[in-house]
Image 1 (cartoon, rainbow, N blue to C red):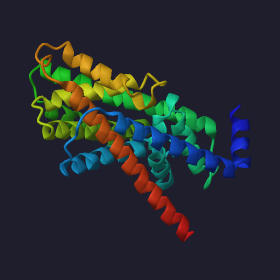
Image 2 (cartoon, rainbow, N blue to C red):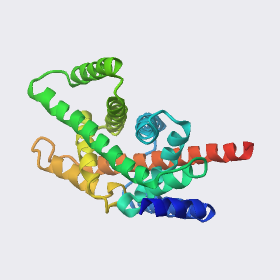
Image 3 (cartoon, rainbow, N blue to C red):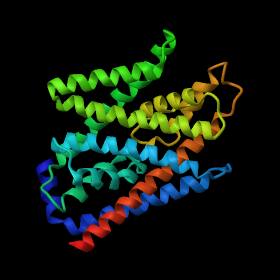
Amino acid sequence: MFNKLNHLLINNLEKLKWINRIISLASLFLIYSLITDQKFSLNWSWNFLGVTLIIMIGYFFHSLSWSLIISNEISYEKIFSWFLSLIGKYLPFKLGIPIMRVTKDIQNTEVDTKKYFLGVIYEVLYQVTSGGIIVATYFIAGFYNVSFLLVISIFLLVLFAIYKTTHSKKLIIFITSFLGYAMFLLSIDFLARLAGYEASLDIAIAYIASSIISLFFVGAPAGIGIREYIFITFFNTNEIFATADFLQIALIIRIVFIFTDFFSYSLFKLLEFKDNRKS
């Protein structure tokens, strides 16, 4: 089946470029609809750009994971196609992600569609594992009353020490995925502080946990609705936080991530345009 798909892609490359553009436009329209449908006011702060930058660093680590999964090395082209597929997750069933990566990479090199589709599954599994460990570490550190930051730092040092000895490909993929989620945690914590929430780290951990769970709901574009529902439910069932309004911060986080996705896509689309003009 995948051999036939490969043959179909190669023979219809120009049509696939247009399909890619249509997916991009559809995704951008959905992003625009999501932003305009939110019934709350957001006081813009230039500090939010700092949050966007931290998220983009996390995205960069995840793009490294993808490059290592799909090509066993850090490849500029694979990092490029990863960022250009960011908005593909806003289509139902997340099929836009592998399709956009395939249609981008097939222009420059031979592509195995089976490897790409399976690669996306492996990528999600690494994300679930690395993000889940961060969340579990937070609760374990809290239970034993030790510093969460200290435990995470020691854990990373141990991982790097093991990698230096073994040079395991799977381990470095896990490390880059782990660092990506660490950046997301930092960005959400920073954003919650900017929004005036005292329990910023609790908010960040809860959002990361809800993000991981929402990955299993493939029918929801980018986990929209599912992620926020799980996030709010967590705080509503916690007596300490039940009186606070966490719907506001959930929507702010979502908006900032959507903005970052759009900004990252636009930036790499501009770089692609410049590369095409040079060639």
